Image 1 (tube, helix red, strand yellow):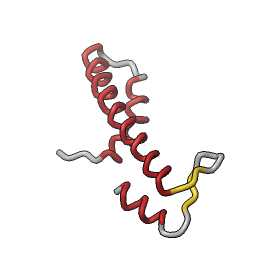
Image 2: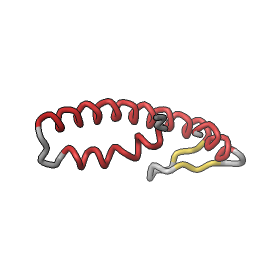
Image 3: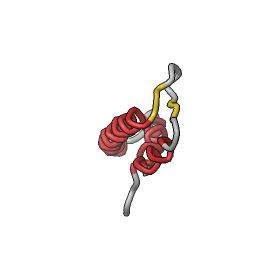
Length: 80
């Protein structure tokens, strides 16, 4: 099974909610292992995404990015 980084990033909040449920020790431990592994991948993705956005865009004060010219499509292409 192939999982894209985008799917991992989208799964993190759901796994966080699952981990707060009353689970058996075995299930809670396994979920913690999966969550820790996926969180590491999501952190890497976020760091790389920020680098690409900084390369092609200009950061606004609210955390969003503004792109000039064709830079938005270049950033989007590199993110894909």
